[in-house]
Image (cartoon, rainbow, N blue to C red; front, side, top):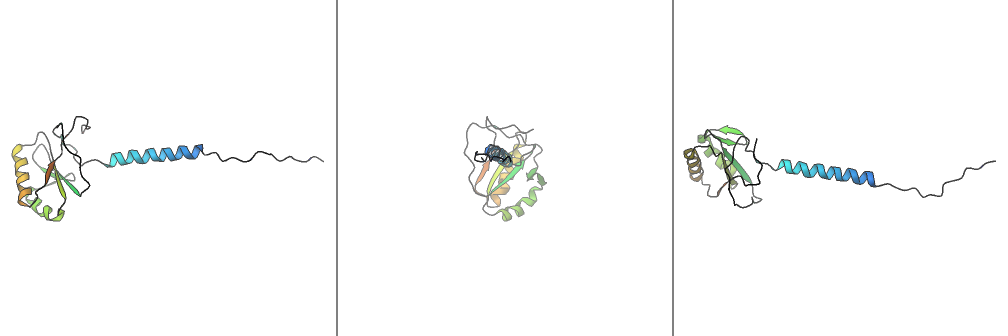
Length: 136
């Protein structure tokens, strides 16, 4: 009678495929986070600046002013008269203005005046730095 021999090798768990999958997932989530951190300024060409400061972690509202002088919040055009009602909803949020370089200066001053009348004291401007991506 012939007996089957058992293998003397200890079974080994190969972790390389698991490590590959973990790095793939890590790369995906890092890339997804980079894409999520974007301001809603589609169609707005921001003015360039050489210096500035980083955005803090407080609640932020971005108001865009397009080339025609229209006010956009989250990509939706709103009349300037309705802006006062929105200011009470925002409370103490930080207000950022993203003016298009082609926007009429008078419209920008009118927007700033409306914000000041609504009690907003801390207004900041979004601008494009030399290494910022240009919106398409």
